[in-house]
Length: 445
Image (tube, helix red, strand yellow):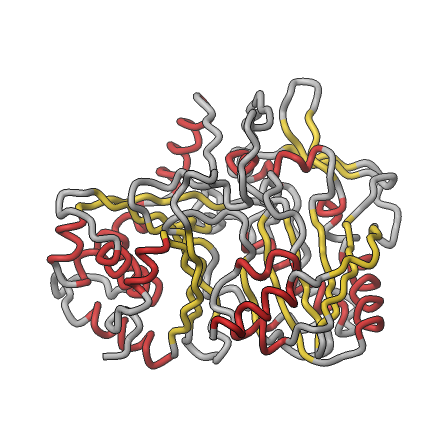
């Protein structure tokens, strides 16, 4: 196994960039400016959001041309991705587009010793680095670099598509809206199912002036950790439909009261992860542990925003308890804590959070999610395996190495379909070693 991993790392290191071009909208758009709003601004100090999709088969040169042609068309609607960050005369950040800007960066690369099956079998993400652009690049650099970079790598038997999105201008919902729309055009459609709603100030119009500069000491790695920081490991866990149903059934078998609302699939899986990660961390009973979820607020704000709202319309919901309480109680205790925090995050709570932030803006670093935290990003509701550009569904969808810290979790629709869910977790190496041996966590008991 170690030999196989070493050979794969060697093949990844043989990724060669062959060319760099830029793609702009296929028609004249003109000058456009759109203020970044309170929901966007906290992400300026995060890193570019990286996604990797890999596909089997196809003729690489033809695929590249089809993707570029489709990108020209889709950027006519999603033109903000072809722009840059800027500031107005009062120092308020905005996204700007003009026809003389470069557009989206497209890199073409080759790694013809690497197969799709090798990528699909990889349980970590460190070996994906050379397949995705903008490792360790802050969103703030969008002032002078493209807001989207796409690397198309020719594999031995397929195509790897690494995308780096500037998180200051869009969240996961908007990311996958863009990707599915791009795929729809590439499959031959003349229009997309849902155009983006670009008026982000309809969700929040408060003008917030920020004085931001780049960190004085650049981080030593793309994970934002210096050499002294604990070693982190990432691992990919696949939960089958049967395992998910079992987890949900177990959590709901112990309802706090007859009138209690059933726990959702998300709440059930979330507490399963939270409890087992907390156990693997070997915390003291009195130690606090935080659960954080980045929740979509499109339907929580007043008035609600359309599904196609393009931008960030998420907020972090935090809840905390003692490790001893979380582990000594049945799983419905933790599920109830999560459920209450999510349900309490209504339009009033969102408004209060925004006002508090606007009064004293604080730019969080991506790892400020709380002590002994489990922080969940992405969502199994995103139809990532429906992103078919005309040569079939992806064999795998993964996150890159940016924006990872101890306790970061990404949830994806399971490759096996149905209610299955794939879980990417980043933990300190010692904690991960215990978690991956935990048969109850893995649903092997």
